[in-house]
Image (tube, rainbow, N blue to C red; front, side, top):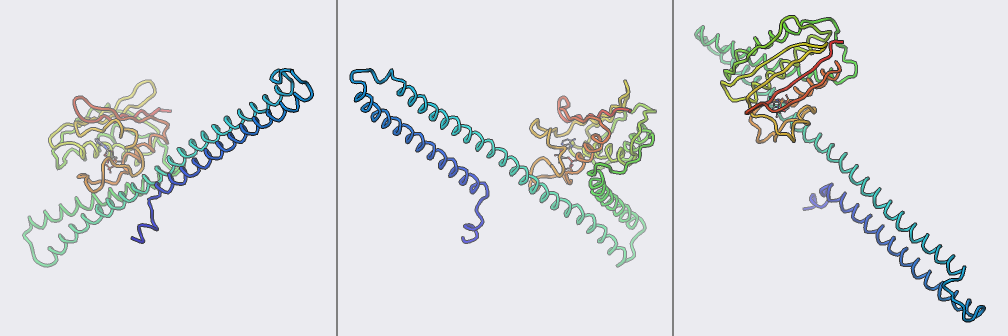
Amino acid sequence: MLKKIFSPNPFKVFYLVFAYILAFSVWWAYLLYAKNETAYKEKIELNQITFWQIHPGDDYNSSDEYKMVTAKYKRQKLMIETEGSAFIFLLLAGLLAVRRVFMREMQLARQQHNFLLSVTHELKSPLSTVKLSLQTMAMRKLEPEKEEKLIANSLVDIDRLESLVDNILFAAKIERDEPGFSNDEINLSDITQSVVERLAHNKKNIRIHDQVKPGVYLHADPIGYTSVVMNLVENAIKYSEPSTDVTVALTESDGQVFLSVTDSGIGIADSEKGRVFDKFYRVGNEDTRKTKGTGLGLYIVRRFVEIYKGEIGVSDNKPVGSVFKIVLPKV
Ligand code: ADP
């Protein structure tokens, strides 16, 4: 109970403080307004009596003094109205700006929490499997086929661990403005094809169609480009039903290189399309999500494309799935 009182919802506190400031300002504006109104009426009444004593029978409303007092009153009224509205407008704009920053920070904190949860899980599960396999082999002599199977499975798990660690290290490196990339001319076609070949024998039996034009070159970092293709194709496999198709296409024209990865998977809702490239962002919630991941893959892809002054986009595939497209300028 005490904990609840002393750790209130920050949003509620924020809105409460804002409502208080707003109510306070409106109240003061109203008081000023009313005071100006009363002061004007009293001044007019007083001046009218003095005026009639000096100019009996004359119309006070057409006197210079009446016009002067009325003009001053109107000026003050306008001042209260404009300054009051400007203040409320600025207050609202400030509220929206602070709220946006607040929401962004909260989302980042949630994503970092999700990231930690998934990384912990992704590190722990292959480690446990490898440990169990080694313990089994150490404890008793197994038949050669069984031993081979355990070793093969352990190698797959170690590969998984390696690619996870590589992605984390690469995400840290690519975050810098100058990531120290090599800028030699590389054969994108060869790299793309080798990634396709590596992922062709996947557990989900997804067919990867290679539409790679041979001999496409670019001045870029080979490790970075490999990671881009790897992340896109791995995602296409991960977010698709078994035995579906994925197409990887690479072409070039007018001094630009075009890479696309098309799948027939679960697709990405329009509201999520702009966010999937954010660091740690994963669609859905860590507790309910079935797929494994860290939310770093598409962030790496986006940063690589930014560094090489290219463009990236995702659209819907027809009838289902997603198409990720990258355009990279050759110079
Ligand atoms: P993750 O490690 O979660 O795969 P990514 O940065 O690679 O992280 O992708 C971010 C999110 O974008 C994923 O969690 C997933 O929700 C969505 N996503 C990425 N690729 C695809 C795809 N081909 N089809 C559907 N959703 C995708």
